[in-house]
Image 1 (cartoon, helix red, strand yellow):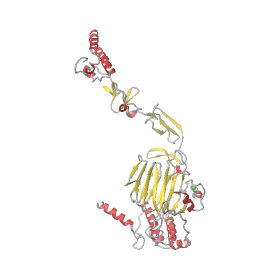
Image 2: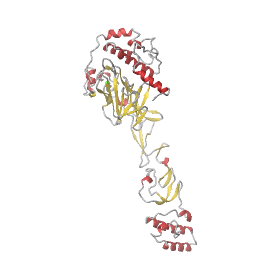
Image 3: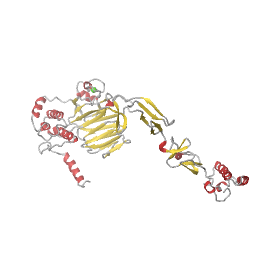
Length: 476
Ligand SMILES: [Ca+2]
């Protein structure tokens, strides 16, 4: 094999003269009665010399029977990678710049670990009978008091005493034990708009500029920063409208839900259809009933019905750390009208103005006059089974919803708007629509409440006919 012209060593002949190796080989074989090991040794030394000179040697072991004994789960390679895959670096062969070597290479699915080829899955740390991936963090007990790490260097588990931070509790969700928010807070705005803060304070604010609805104000390593902005529409004499644009900023993604784009949302300036997920699924946006819902992996949910109703739900870990029109979520209702400057505002208008983020051309923030005969209007409406009274009517179209969604708040908002806008129908129609939406979301059947003379459908007809066309395959 050493001297055959087209044999495995032929490429090396011009670099290292094989003659002396051949002579030595013949001599050794003679002296040892043709012992196979002698032959293999001689061939190995020539192959090594060639390889040192950078000459590629093809497989000479198979034809000569000088197989290199390879251990379990590995196989002989005449020209294998000099950088074998290991537990710490399974991709090492792909980034190897050294020339190939004669080696025993671990089989597919195995990696070299302490001189042995072990299954890839065997890389990691064993702890209480379970195997953890290198770098994996996990709880070492079922009460979340020991946080453990499978150290990639030592492949040993090290644990530290810790616990769930304030506002979180240790429990299992979807099979995963972790510290989860112990509760959630909700803030909403609808109609005029009427606000209900995280701590439950109700107030009205009619500014039509861009405002911070809610956002992280006390920065913390444990809390993901976010901001929810709202813009309300200017209320003209003919078209009455409410929250027009909702903007969510989180994980450097900018999401805009606006009345201009019903059924769709704008993500980083691109108009997209739902459902949609972005930033490694940290944010998902989907449709729930009549609402667009933005949900984050840390428990923040923002829902907007593309019309007038916005709801923000935040985990209790954010208690006391947020600010904006939704208040600070510290459980204290009395300090909800805290301005951006940190002082308590004398009224919702001053409070709201302080949370302005941006002026929109033509936006206004005038404090509206109180409605002088509010109480009389409320008394009158309460006794009616039309207008705002339709919401409370025990035999009316919403009768089956009363036990699921309390109509009283909606009724009061309706009366308030009715009074202020001198009974403009479009205003109260929006509010009744809000209640209908909430009933739908609660899975309750409601009965026809619009008539040709009361809250006749306008824009909705177009949307509905669009949906019908799609349903019958006529969509464009
Ligand atoms: Ca508060």
